[in-house]
Length: 352
Image 1: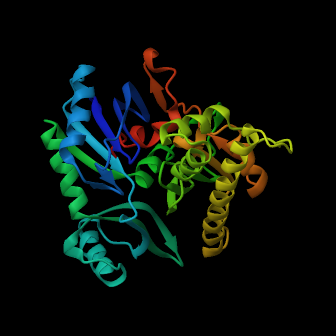
Image 2: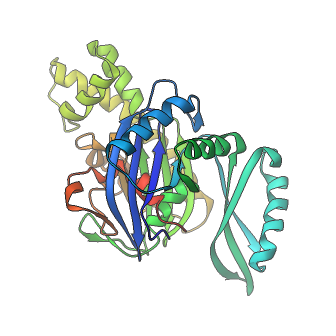
């Protein structure tokens, strides 16, 4: 848990999110929040392609806003990240590392010397009177880890941690809090869906524990590209039109540009929903009792008007866009920040 101000950096293909804040008991206190465009061709799927360009824009925003914090955490999503939940017979914590390594070498399709491996105990439980451990294992290519370490050092900051989005967001849902003015029920199984620019990430949280996560190679960019092509717009203008003028409510059968826009958006969202349903069906089929009680949406494209209602009507699971979380508190000057766009960056500040 970080009690002094920390800089949290989340680099994406479209934008870089930066949070300056700290943790206080089970709350995160946010002092500053910034979004800056990601320089063209500087970042792809977790890999830093142009460190100099990224350093310049991040350093400039920290300098401009007189950010004095010197420690930094980073969080990312990548199709190259591998996560697995494994069950082991109970052993002492100091003995677990060697067992994890043996399991990875046997079951994961990676070369151990090319990845950085981290693990954490999710829970201790008993099965047939045998004490066991449920462990989350995460593997990330060393090339990615080393490039982030180099970037943070070049910024003159002290690297504290590198997290993946699934683990970061799960930490924010470990304890009781109020979300959208309703109590978060730890007895429910919730699916957290991050609708990003290139990918959608689904994390399933059951009783406050991350049980399952998957990355879908669909996102806001698909919608933006279709709108840009149809209306001869730049991708930036298309992204704005997607949020400002779209409506997924029942449209009239006309040929207006507004109706054409909605049809383009709806056709892409139908693809998203199909992929989400496949993931849910796989998760619920893995074990008796697996279920999804509620869906929470966040990320840039979760701002599409009526999206949560539209998804709920098809999947038949209550679906909500994340607007407020009582365990995330902003200074007065930051009250108008769109929380859903910063949740990954904020959650990375929770140091567990």
